[in-house]
Length: 273
Image 1 (cartoon, rainbow, N blue to C red):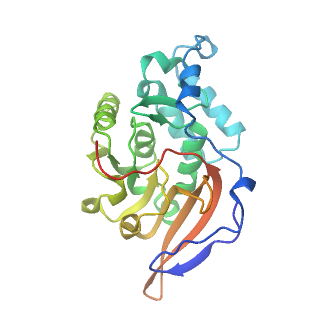
Image 2: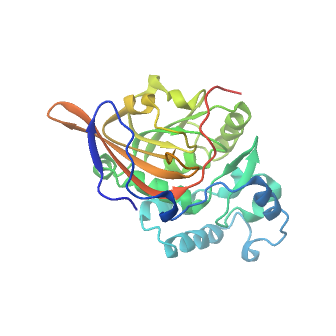
Image 3: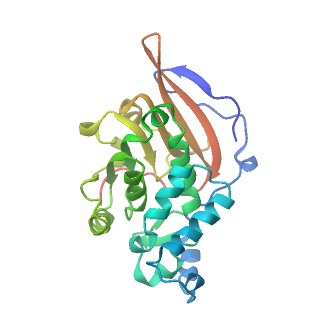
């Protein structure tokens, strides 16, 4: 974990954490696709239980709690959302293991433990605590739609943007099947630009890591809001989870930045495909 959070006015400056990327614990939300493909060849279904059984999700939640996830609101959301419907049927037998799985176009669905950690960090924000929920959320990188579904379960009004049209359409099908289409607004577009028409957002979370935090995200983060995103460590190939809180002091905007676990996400890219 990093040291004391650092305070600065606009514009946001890059700040080192004072801790090398090698010394941080490394969360692995997306592994190499070759490893994920090898996992997909395994045949045993988890514990012999049907994937539609609530007990399968209960066991995943119990494992996440045992591994240190303490936010009961996040754990309850994991218990309600069926992860297996968001992955290819050939991979569904692994849906409730703590593993990433390929979802097409070189992308993966992140490990539940990493998704849980990022959601817990969002829920710790000041505004989230007051509202007993995440308020209005911008998600960068819809992917297959799993995290968007969890966000909707956490009392959020979700705007989720995806730059890959195939995944954008897949997520729409998945969320419609769960009856969540009206609670999650899906946008096909460039995530680095955020989505200004829906701003400001109480919470912003990104599922891809760039060299910096785009200025558009900061401009769209409401006062009292919190942003969680993987960001590259200067001078290395590593990434860390960065948390940024938008505070108003003396009539001036300040962004308070802290750095957390090392992670490995797909790169944040511009444009649409």
